[in-house]
Length: 483
Image (tube, rainbow, N blue to C red; front, top):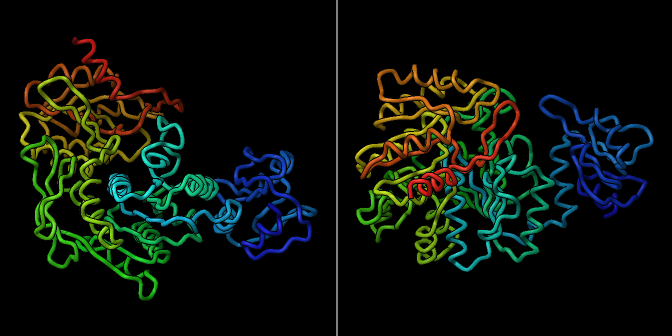
């Protein structure tokens, strides 16, 4: 693509009309003929890497003023916004061939996105999905899902390249998890979403390089709604008005919730008496929807998906079929266990998510709930206290172990949790594989063994190294050894 065509997307002219072969915002990824966009990072200014990019063969540069003398390119005030527009142009605007659906909220984005993917597929649409667990066309991953996606919402070059793959593969719809960081960093700048879905908002991602305070966090979430043609929101959440206030004039609004003010109202979310750890969700008095996940929080995500699909005109038959087949890696995920007890894997890694999954499991009245969990190193220590309190509130026994200790000693982390647990029955087994084996050995008929914290992750990170680790594989190994 000619440099002049690319720069026209950001309103910039360049007399030297060279051929551009690629886009890059990391100088280490520059190839000969690339356009290098110098971004301002949390700890470094991308302008400092322009010489390296040129040495690697960059044909042009886009950056904040000044542009190095003799270098083709363009000057912009906001390189991140420019990168999004350049990526759309370079990949020939794949979004124009797609119905884009955005899902945002503090909790539940991944589960709701999977539900929407299944419903739209049941409705006959070829559907892509982009989020925490990576990118998919239908249920097929576009990359190695053993690695967690670097960002819930990819950077613009990856995002538009992925959208181009989806459009070329015949997708008509794409469900995207859109994070507050994505909005803050202009990753989806220039995109218009056919619909945006707001789930909930609670304090998170505050501090460090993320958000200065809750007000900024909420403002970044709300900014998404400037870019949609239809909004569906959780009327039970007090932050919904801040989202709705950002909508374009005349954009339709639909709400959902458990309260009387909701357009799509849930009357009851109750354990399914015929299926362990599943939920029956009654909406507007109609025949209950079967949700193959436990708890009101998963039912709330299903309600959000139902409301959005109704707003888009998707048939109720497709909604029911899609929900009934939803399975989300690492989210209240049942692990095959040839035993008279259940094994559940969940990504819960703070007090609120512990409360949510454990209260959901408790609704099904297991004989005992046995936990395996640790806590991430180099993260706020109050999380350990909050998780311990939730564990003591809902569970019967805990085996403390490693999670992602990062630079902290595992024993120190477990000691912090142990102190917060106090007299609650627990023990410490530092090796996570051995801890899982111990919990399974302790389990008996009617128990639930809950492996919390890792979820979809396929590694344990310590001292800058990620070693492969699969909880599902460990559970499978345990039963293979037993038999």
